[in-house]
Image 1 (tube, rainbow, N blue to C red):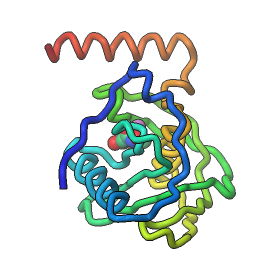
Image 2: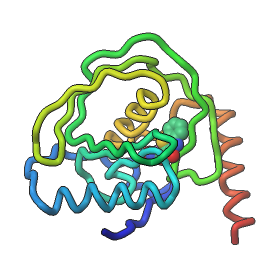
Image 3: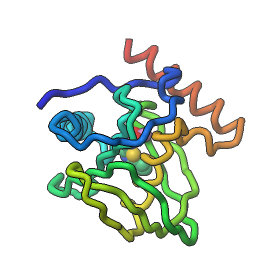
Amino acid sequence: MSKLDILEFPDPRLRLKAHPVETFDAALARLADDMLETMYAAPGIGLAATQVNVQRRLLVLDVSEAHDDPRIFVNPELLEARGTEVCQEGCLSFPGVYADVERKDWVRVRAQDVTGKPFELETDGLLAVCVQHEMDHLVGKVFVDYLSPLKRTLLLRKLEKQRRHAG
Ligand code: GNR
Ligand code: NI
């Protein structure tokens, strides 16, 4: 396994739209493993292929405290969504800044595993929020796109400031 580099805002490649996965081979399984390793090391609770400069519809998640519940979604599609909730979100492509984002609080998602086998997931809470955050990355969307112009400006200014201090 190897750790991958995570693209950071404002890298234009974060705006690219991912293509469906058509080949379920060893390279795909390896990429999913590398993404999980990269996510755990960051540390983060999710990672989309877009963030590691791969334009494929693939995302990984693990919202468990013990980091023992890795999940891989290939070609995810949102089938149904209900209600709303506000959650404070962060993003590995915007290190060190956080903002409240409103999402659906219950979702039903259809996807394939790394072997191509279809499955469905109905979920709520943090897992539902994270799935929506990652699926956004696959269409070139990021969490700051949901903020008002003023809040976005303040958040991006804070991101710049932190980068300057990080040297
Ligand atoms: O690590 C992450 N934490 C997080 C917290 C609240 C809502 C969404 C997330 S996803 C983020 C990792 C990431 O950037 N995935 O794309
Ligand atoms: Ni993100």
